[in-house]
Image (cartoon, rainbow, N blue to C red):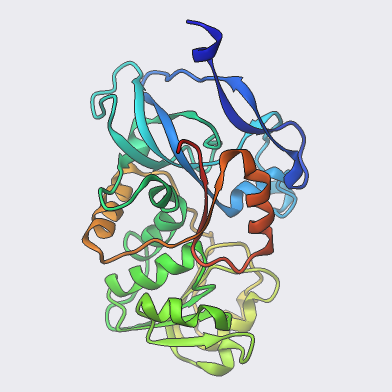
Length: 327
């Protein structure tokens, strides 16, 4: 095997820092271990944990930070084609089109032309999506799916409120809340996202730049899916009914004692999305049926990953950002 086949192009960081630490370079091509497949990546999704990792997890409390050391290839969301099988893999064949959330919450290494993945972290790519669309689904889609379909959401007949409704997790959550049985879905985002969210089926739109959600829809939600978190997360509590549930996607200050006084439940441990080819197969069926749609905010070539991270840091995304790896 010559050098040409033993290496690949990838985006790697050699030190933690801003977007410019992401370098497009030649790196060794991995080989699948037993139980793994090698995927030729066509597209890779960008997620907030990629940004956290790039900066050395400084946004995460020290006791929760993974012990990752450079050099690192970031990225957990991929869509591509099976190139090689590791020992013992029988579920896939070379040439199969697959997508997946790889090794999360561990290191996925998806910003590359090839990546290895545990066979059970992958699902067949939805036939109705191209690779760039499919790569936008895994982490955000599985977060919403595992919270709302496979989790603890008490929704039948109730009202779901999604804060940060236009973003990656949010735009899936407003759709999956309906599938989970919500009678009414309220989406909170900035005003430019209203038409987008109404197109996804929200019954009521709240522009938080004009009116705080807790004032616009007081005591309205049986379930709050908060994709924003942060130090001001507690300001949403008055929007939740007594007996309601808050599902935080990111770390936030929810003033737990106050929440308890209001009769609002917040899980002691924040639920975290996990890799699951089985869950992703269920989500793929919903995508192929048209009941769930994915939206791309933008697509960047792999070599321009730094520019994609700069866009991600500006926030206010409508859907997801994706890196195109193979044309």
